[in-house]
Image (cartoon, rainbow, N blue to C red; front, side):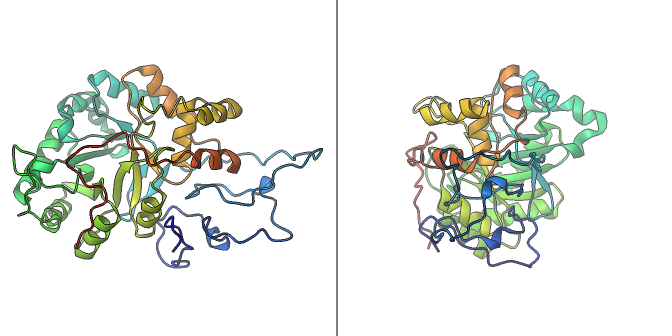
Amino acid sequence: MANDGSQAPAWTGQAFSYLPYHKESTRQPTYASAPAPDPAPVDRRQAGNVGTWSGPAPTGFLRAQAGEAVTAPAAIVQNPDYVLLRTGHRIPLLGYGTYKVQTSDAVRDAIKAGYRHFDCAAIYGNEALMGEGLQDYIAGGHRSELFITSKVWNTDHHPDAVRRCCKQSIKDLGCEYLDLYLVHWPDAWKPGTKDADTSIPIEQTWQAMEGLVDAGLVRTIGVSNFNISEVEHLLSKARIPPAVNQVELHPLLSQRKLVGTCTRKGLHMTAYSPLGHAEPDVLGNKVVQEVAQQTGRSPSQVVLRWNVQRGVSVIPRSNTPANIASNIDDLFSWHLSNDHKARLDALDCGHRTVDNDWHDWDRIVQ
C-alpha cells in the first residue's frame, strides 16, 4: 500500500458494484505509485472516459507543447449525481447541510432548487424546524425521492438511548423512516456531561444501530468522524457493516488515506464543511480563485466539484436562496482538468476547521 493509502483495486470482476470506480480503473497504476510514462502514452486530452475519479490527479497528463494545436475535448456527458451504497440505496452526491439553518423556508428553497439529500442531526436542535420545511413535499407523496440523514449524539450511545433518539428524530422530521443514521462521533459520554463513558463500547452502540435496520426505522447505518483504526475495529465487530463515514473534507484537508481506505472497505465518504470556513479562507485561496476564473465557475463550485469528482458526496449549508441555488447549479455537467485538480490537491495542509479538545483524531483502537 502506498503511503497515501491508495492501491490498485483487488476486487475486479467481483460483485462490488457499489464502489464508485470506473470499470476501466484497474488498467491504470495507482496515482501514488505510477511508473514513468510509457514511451507512447495515451493522450488523455482526447480520452472519452467519464464518471468520478478517486484520489489525486494522475501524473503524466500531457500538456500542449509550444505551437501545438489542442484538439477540442469530447463533449462532457452528464455525470451520475448519486452513489450506490453497499446497501443498494442511492445517496445523492450533493446534499443540503442543516447545521445552524434557522428557518424552514431554507429547506423549501433547497427543495425548489433541486436538493433531495438533507443532512440533519439531533444535536443541531432544529430537526422539528427542518421537518416543517420537508412537510409539504412529503405530504405530496414524494418521500421516496428524499434521502434524509440524522445522527445520534455522544450522550446517547446506550442502546436504549439510540433507539429512543432515532424515533424522536423521525418524529421531528416527519419522515416515516431515516435513509441514513450515523453515530455522530466515536466518543461515548455520560449523559449530561462531556465525561467519557467507558462502560459503553462502540460495538454495543452499533448493535443498537443494527437493530434500527432490523426494525425498519432506518435503511442504512454509518459513522461520522471515525479514523481508520476506528473503522477497521467496527468492521471486525459489525453484523451490518457501516456504509458511510462522514468527515471534514476540502482541499486544505483531503484525508486521502482515510478516503482511499474507507472506499476500498465499502464505506462511502461524505464531506461536511466542504467549503471550509473563514480562517483560513478556502474559497478565497489564490489557487481556488485562479481555477474558478479559468473554468468560468464560482470558487464554491470548484471546491465542491473537487470532492464530487473523487466520488465524495458533499453537504454544503447556506441560509440564503442565492447561495443554496448556486451550490447545486450545473455541478455535474463539467470536470476539473487533471492540471486543475493537481493544483487543488497540492493545497492539502491537514488544516481542520472543525476541531475540539475532547476528541483524539489519531486514537488507535486495540
